[in-house]
Length: 280
Ligand code: ATR
Image (cartoon, rainbow, N blue to C red; front, side):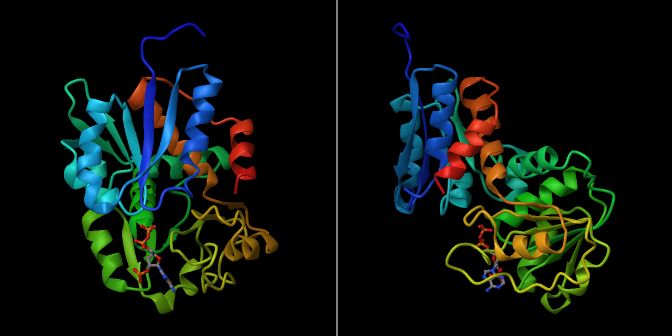
């Protein structure tokens, strides 16, 4: 390569951040497309988030991703955010505009639905009820994605019922909140079950959910990717359900980020998937 006049910069702000697989993901794309640039893990304390975001423009960054615990606070700092991000109540990505102002977007919903469509091209949101477990930030992106994909019946179940009701109120859509005690029976007739709770993540106990009522053709999707197969996904696989973990969601949410930062359409290749899988 000669001497390009601009070194491309982006990164992920989190606290902690060193566990993030985003640098490996995005640096793969710099290499694959032979671009001079880099993507950095940026360890930013919550109290330093505003200063860090405002430093992106003078430092020449195209933008950044946001991870725990910054997604909600960052929405309040950026100059512009699209309607979906506002509804979801969080941003996962910031782009620096030509005038130095900051635009926030939420790409998690996109990663969620693209991963599902890629893995199961025949899946239809409106074919059968969708059951979503959990009502945190991940759930808000998932419910929004399913609503926009045409779901007609979303059964939302959270341990803390008020949080589910708040989500349903903020997002609108065809959402029915069910009580935690109803979770096993709520699987009756479903075409999709999504876990967005932290249960089943490495270090946490499994999600307490009996799958008996779930049709065996329903897709079971856990947005967790460490471990690659949660106890929920294992149980589902053993009874014959098609399953999907959250790794593809992470990979796919990077694509609109690149479009926004560098104007490029990047690809989620098998090689990339293997690179990140091997790093887990
Ligand atoms: P995120 O933004 O990643 O979705 P979060 O906002 O902390 O994370 O949400 C975590 C989700 O896991 C919530 O739905 C939470 O339920 P509560 O709202 O009742 O806290 C759910 N969760 C956490 N621990 C749980 C447990 N032991 N049993 C069931 N659900 C649990």
